Amino acid sequence: MAATPVIAVFDVGKTNKKLFLFNEDYKIVYEKSARFNETVDEDGDACENVDSLRLSVFDSLHAIFRRSEFEVKAVNFSSYGASFVYVDEEGMPLTPLYNYLKPYPENLHKQFYDTYGGEEQVARQTASPVLGSLNSGLQLYRLKYEQPEVYSRVKYALHLPQYLSYLLTGQASTDLTSIGCHTTLWDFEKQQYHNWVLQEDAISKLAPILDANTVLPASFPGNSYKVGIGLHDSSAALIPYLVSFTKPFVLLSTGTWTISLNPFDHSPLSADELKNDCLNYIQYKGQPVKASRLFAGYEYEQQVKRIAAHFNQNTAHYRTLKYDADVVAQLLTKEPQTLITGANSLKVSVFGHRDLSEFANETEAYHRLMMDIVNQQKIATGYVLKGNAVKRIFVDGGFSKNSVYMHLLASAFPTMEVFAASMAQATAVGAALAIHHSWNTAPLPHDLLELKFYSASQAITT
Image 1: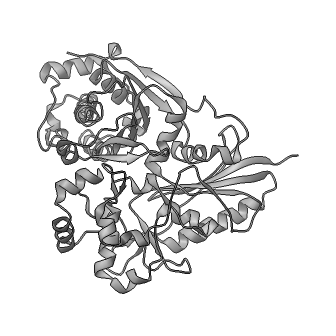
Image 2 (image 1 turned 90 degrees about the vertical axis):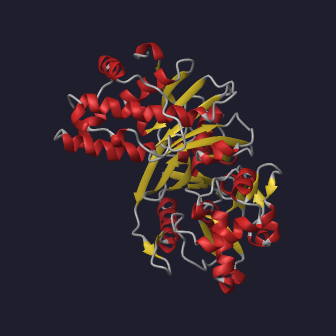
């Protein structure tokens, strides 16, 4: 029996590390998950165990190559951004893989922004809200000033997806989807590295920029497979939609964060958008993607726990709660749905201040929670819809399966076509699609996504 041609994709999240094998129809034919215990850096802050991750990649590939039913034609990677691996001349990591939530020193923050034009100017030029260690370029800046001896030994600062690729190829690279995601490295106005990268000679620590569809020969033992250079996970998740649809759309990717991505808006970010946590990504073909973020998934989890505790119910009960138009109409009679605007409208939960004893039952409380979340979502998504020809919103992730959320979202955007999109492992599929030409002899598929339409006419509006 002939071996099945496949691509192996390592999808590395903060919590779960997954390996998928996709056949030429982009169906999953093998998957494996792993979780590693975190370690700590020299300050005692939690961080990724890069040694365990490296060994896991090698061990997983050895195991796959021993399986005769698969012929691995290519390997690619997707992972979270804002994390550098600093390697020396021999390719060995010089530091821990610092956590992007690590507190950033105030003195270096002030020194950096005072030197290079202030927070507002740098944020606008780099399309990067001021986020401390989440701006990975500032991690490199910090290493230079806090650990100059280590910094002098750095051959390359590699974002995590490119480090994983480097393990298999021995060739260092930089990918635009990684340097274009709130790193403070890339000047979106000039389409080149920001001036500070040149002034600090940080550019000498950055590998050559390669296109996201680049493949390199493997140096790790196996068959004659090709290796992609890896992608930032948010940009990878967008690729199946860009492959499937040509008319303008916004993708609302939902999880702990709900991120609204508009790959058809290339306009510069305004000061107001930056203050409200908007940013630009760079998609795999190099164009900017305007995005806004809302901490809605986290807020949902916290408030559902509060509702469940108050009404003596299990939180799992709310996963299957159906949309009830009559309950929404009743709640709107008590309190019309108006947009809560202002400086804290996207940061402070309205529902968090509500007295749960005011609700007759858990269904009423839950619907009010979802109305408050969608109220914030309308503001956040609105930032990437301004003056745009977008007529479709695709929702993927956790909220796409939430009947109450989807009906309310359709009501919030009555002139849009709102779809719940379903596909298995969009991020990993996106990484595979990015190098389709290098391993797959079949044409690009057009049936990657399952869509469910939600209409505003199905919901109660006032």
